Length: 261
Image (cartoon, rainbow, N blue to C red; front, side, top):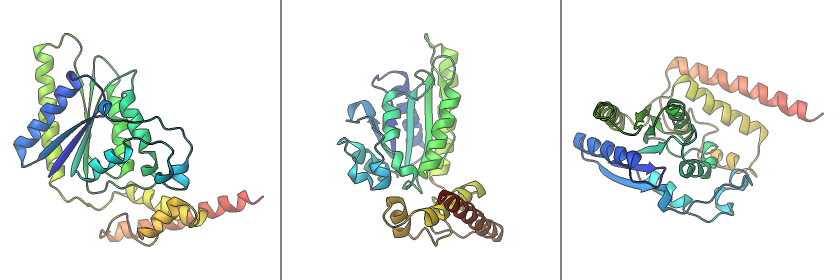
């Protein structure tokens, strides 16, 4: 298996060292190839919000950078970890630019079957909200998410603080490894099932084959499938899925009718 770490800052200090430590712990648990991607070493341009990637397709994006190379690195991985310092109570600029360049994949997710987690390095406060943000982003991109964690590295880093960080990294690496070797395509939770049915039912009614999202769903057979990937739903989830379809279709048709006047 392969795990790729995407680091959101240019310095090889606390965040970088924690990432290396996490990967080393992971390799001690199994036969895992690891790669470190320091985003500052790649060419990433700032999204201009033109929507061409959403409406026509990502290949029409006017920006020419390393976006596709980084996406390929994720596609070639069994697991990924995003690590970032807490900068102004958010991920670093490097990480945010990277995530913005993946924006079209929230409409057309690709990363199913891959395990995700995160580490946020901070001095004092706010990292917990950043971890929640990264969990939510990964959820939207299709990953199997292992809740990330915050590391405290306020200067000077005391021995006690380092011991706490070591325990966090060790626990997170074990949880990540367990998820990594589990069923890569689990049955969806009710909320995941609802979000899938909501997206596909509204697209089917409100869009057409001229829209890239519609064409993508059609190509993948998602307008007829139970979920993004082949999975056997329980009778309860099967019933809930059909109920979601009917409800979303009703709301979408109502909005379409209102829009005509």
